[in-house]
Amino acid sequence: MNIAVLVSGGGTNLQQLINAQKEDRLGGGRITCVISSKPDVYALQRAKDNGIKTAVLERKKYPDIASYSLAMKELLEAEKAELVVYAGFLTILDETVCRAFPNRMINVHPALIPSFCGKGFYGLKVHEAALQKGVKLTGATVHFVTEECDGGPIILQKAVEVKDNDTPEILQKRVMEQAEWIILPEAVRLFCEGKITVRDGKTIISE
Image (cartoon, rainbow, N blue to C red; front, side, top):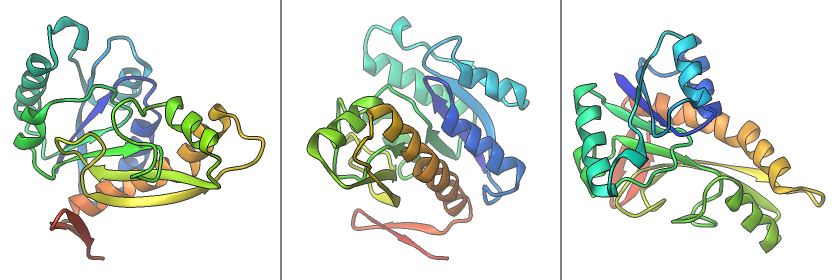
């Protein structure tokens, strides 16, 4: 199964997918292309170092999100993507793309949805909000991408403890290491093995 990975930064989640692929933990899936919304990000180097094709679709070269989304849809179709994975991809695409790939696009979000999610909640902002609220548990969620930002059917979630002396940066690192890096490759494996069914807006996983 052809997997396209969308990135915008350093590519730490991409690296976990590459590691999983090397260890044959992607359920027969193969990362065939890494597409970045920005040039010169380290995620592109990670892909090149592992012999994976790269492309840059620069957000700022498009006048609006509609034209950018259309270009992304066309690129993904040209790449024959069967699964699209958001791995730190910071552009919210419009409905053009998720309608073209229904229940075939997944995202990892650094919180337990429906907490601290939706437009504006990304990167450190998520962890700042969690600390401000004083939650004792946070975590990460892998979900299908739909027209509603962070609103698609949830595939996997993993909880992470919040500690008294946490800063947003410390919490971000713990959530990545203890949740994101574990459940994203696992969700990709389940998808590629055909073990995820969506029914009434909820996922059913058969192992």
